[in-house]
Length: 164
Image 1 (cartoon, rainbow, N blue to C red):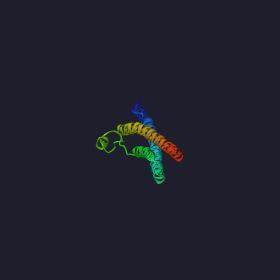
Image 2: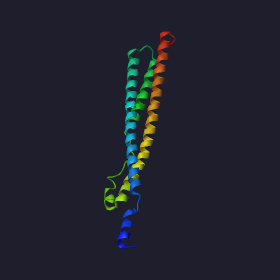
Image 3: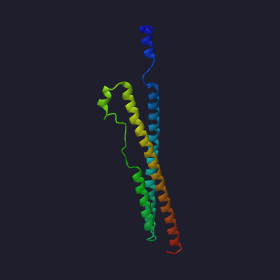
């Protein structure tokens, strides 16, 4: 084997799986983007929950017939608080590019990209957890809102029959 053959062989054999790392990086970025959109949709649903709770409470107060209706207002307010809690900004392990900036400047390209991909992977896991917990919270808020509506309907029916 000549020196030229050895150099060509070294040039074709990559010491690191660079292409796989780039594919992983692209896929993680795609999934994080998708989860960010899902979280934005959940925040919209939480805002609708807060609005619907406010409308329900306003309608109850505008048509006041019994002190029992106050319980419906309280349940509606609980639904609104749940919606607000679901919209609360949360901090997580975001990609720490700025925190590791100096480290990454001195590293080789593969190590730098690996570090960035690993940070994004950790952030992706946190994004999944955040979407799951926010979705669960919004669903619970809507259940509470339905309970408030049903309670209000029952109280209105009982009031119109003069039973309470």
